[in-house]
Structures are given as C-alpha cells and as structure tokens.
Length: 194
Image (cartoon, rainbow, N blue to C red; front, side, top):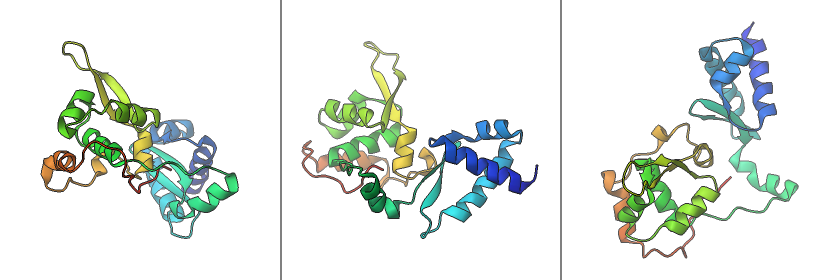
C-alpha cells in the first residue's frame, strides 16, 4: 500500500470517527505498522495545522483527532447555535494544576495543597470530563484517586501530560497559588473549554 493510499485512509478514519482514535487501532485496521501511521499523521499535521486552515489535527498521546481551528470557534458557534462554554474559575484551574502535576491524587491531597475544601470543584471537573476517577488508595477508607482525562489534554491542546510546562518556581506552584486564594470561585479564568 502506497503512502498516498495510507494518508487518504487515515484521513477518512479520523474524519468519520469524530472522537480520538488510537494509533495502533488505525494501524491494525489498515494492516500497517504504527510507525507508518505516525509518519502519515506528521504529514497531515503539516497539511492542516496552518493558521488559515479550518481544521487542525491534534495528537493526544497515542491517539489522534480532527478538531476545529481554535481561531474559528466563534463562527462555528454562531452557525451551529452553540452556547459559549463557561470559563473555568481560578479554583478550578488550581485544582486542575495540582492534579495534573501530581496525579493520581486523592481529594484530601488537593485540599491539603490548596488549604480549602475542594469537593464541589472536583465534582464539577469530573462532570465536565476534565478529571476522572483512577481507582482507590490502599489506605483506611480507600479514598478515590483522581487524574486528568483525554478531554483535559484536548481542551489544553497537549499531546500528553508530559508536555505540561514546568511549574514556575519548582514543585511549589500549587501551594503558592493557594496562598493568594481565599477559596472563592468569584474570579473566572479566561481559558475556555472547547
């Protein structure tokens, strides 16, 4: 099978899927090695991930997905009559940062770092699909462990959790943020969920 044939097939699979598709699953469906799919995806990113392109190709760890170019989200919302997503609060951003840099973690760990109750914020982030349960800790009471989701990677346009920028000032970022926060959710952050 030629590279051109593979490219068209990978494009068709990703377009039809609408959801992130595992690279090894694409390779298996086409009867090629995952490395060949990775090469095709690199070419597709060059083709689509341009400022003037309406479609971008996101690589999310070991999966890929077509998405709307963030620069054109407003006309898409207007045409499809989509409601604008609510921005994440400062507290939600802090909880996400603590979980993302330390996962998997318990709610008690997040509360210890931030110094305030995080039950509502964690529940909201789970409901939005940015955090997920990752099992239970082998301690009395068996508290739930939380980690970030593939949706988190997609919303923040990260290929993997390893692509997070290093926290400013080392590992104390979350604690430094919590020192200036009184636990209120009244100051919305400007990052929007896609």
